[in-house]
Image (cartoon, rainbow, N blue to C red):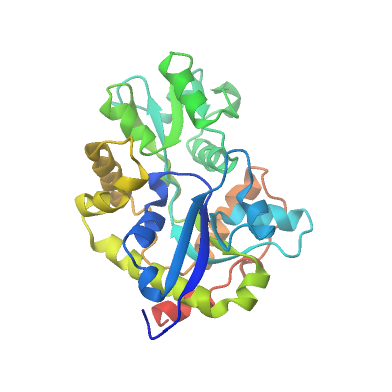
Length: 309
């Protein structure tokens, strides 16, 4: 702990359980937040409920989410839209998995094929759409099965109703390990640096509990430095309790792939270029209307202080 004698309770919520969010699990299980004097109550947003709504109602203090949620709230006129204080994922963490082998695969192969993009939020489809457009894929020629929750999308794929499925790991890696699929594309490297996931708080909580949030960001930065240096085996050892039904080889392979793609931010600062890139993809995809500036959504001061920048 960085000099504080007292302890504070922080209610931290994730929107969805995925290895994509490994930095959160490492921060919690690795004791990085505990050493900052924070007793973390960690939870996952209940299925069918909006994490942003829970945050705004006071049901959580800090939420893992995307800048998309704040941008959409601003579009709707909510001047108290959550602000984002630290970056978790600096790239998209979803994959295209094909029933057929990947050798010689081209993006145009999606034309005329049936694709099931997991639909628990609209953002993964929006970034996938951006990748399709960049590769000249005719969206009208892709047969989409949209709006499916994870389990239903997997069932459709497994029973042969879809040629491709779009999902994160460990699910993508599990299909590969089970011999049921081949990863033909990773969306992260296609789109480069994006502020994909970050920690958000209400403006009121930031004003009232700024010192607590500073310790949170300090601890998360220590976690990020450890994660950047650690091997897949060590990381898997920390996150395994969060994925009781996933084997260690699948965890390690998923983590190795995510690390190799620079998926996880190595520092908490949300850069303006990553924010702008994500915002513009959301606008192009029709999910967001307003070109809301960086300063309206991001509060970088905690990350700057944590890193000594």
